[in-house]
Length: 282
Image (cartoon, rainbow, N blue to C red; front, side):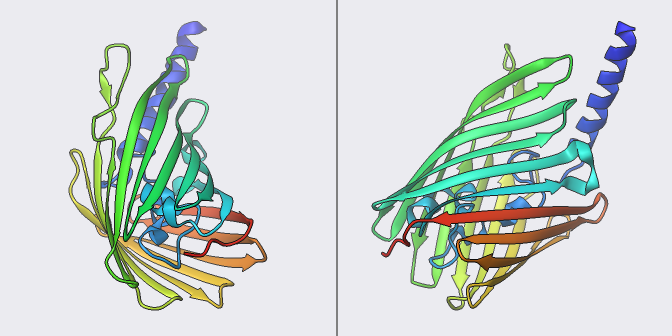
């Protein structure tokens, strides 16, 4: 009976790992959720920053207009075992801002999770930010392990319309296991945002992950009268399109998201953002 249970658990673990191995070629499973990589597109802007912008570049927290929180959930490729959940809180403070985040991906058989605290600050027309994370991996019947992971980022506001930046995830190569046999990949990213107007933002990210090919994420955001939001994008590595439609009411905003992978299929998602307090003025 014990051997049978171990075999079943191992089989489930192997199946999940195989799914993870076939995720988008440009990303590791936890760091870039299937649709959530576009949620932080507003980081490189003045008018589109929200509580999720810090997940793309912690320097964006320095321009957070209001305190608030957000939650996001997706069922990756319509698979229960690949459900992803993310929660964030952001609080502006003077010329800076704090952020707290938590992410969970997987199921009872195998899951990855991460909690982190971040801070971003303004230095004139340059913003800088840093985040400390504790990342964990758990597999049924095999226990769990964790490691510390660092993220750093900077954003240059070249003009009121053009914003560029760099973000680095795990530059020192955090490792799992008592003998440090498992290593989390590093990720380097260069981003740019062009605000066509206060209602339209074009964004681009060039991403290089360890042992992966370079990919480009291109996105468009459109805000109609501050109530209706439309976002769309494309990941060049797998020609995977993504889109969301959102509606803001008072201090709350809801987005319905969807992305499509040519081989793995459709990923639906739901985003909720809550704002509180007075809006910060620059």
